[in-house]
Length: 137
Image 1 (cartoon, helix red, strand yellow):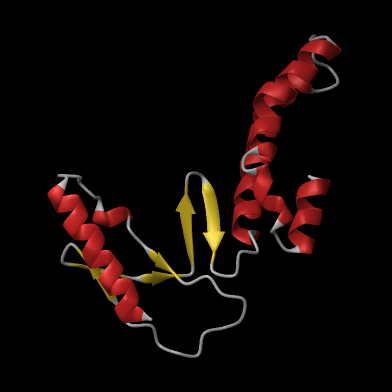
Image 2 (tube, helix red, strand yellow; image 1 turned 90 degrees about the horizontal axis):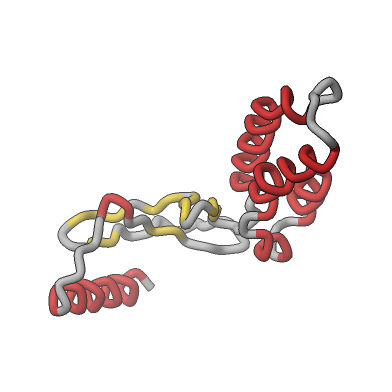
């Protein structure tokens, strides 16, 4: 399997060199997505003369993908981000705020809801316990 992956990486290198596409190898990671645990030691891969490390999780477009696709890390990250914003908005959305209910709702829709709804399409694939936590939040 590693030899097939290495051949694919070599083909990508050739294509990038031919078309003069620059790749940031510092942002290139290898992740093995699987349901169970791995018993085998995975061979290292090289890409543009840099060794790639096998990681347990990777951040891609703001979405944290872990090796079992449970999205536990992503949910934890989003929860912390959500509550940090809530604490900043408490003076505006709290009970003693002079804002009207419509303005408070607007703040929720514009600031807080996007944090919760970002990449919502993946929640169908997430573990049940993590989906439940997201629904509660």
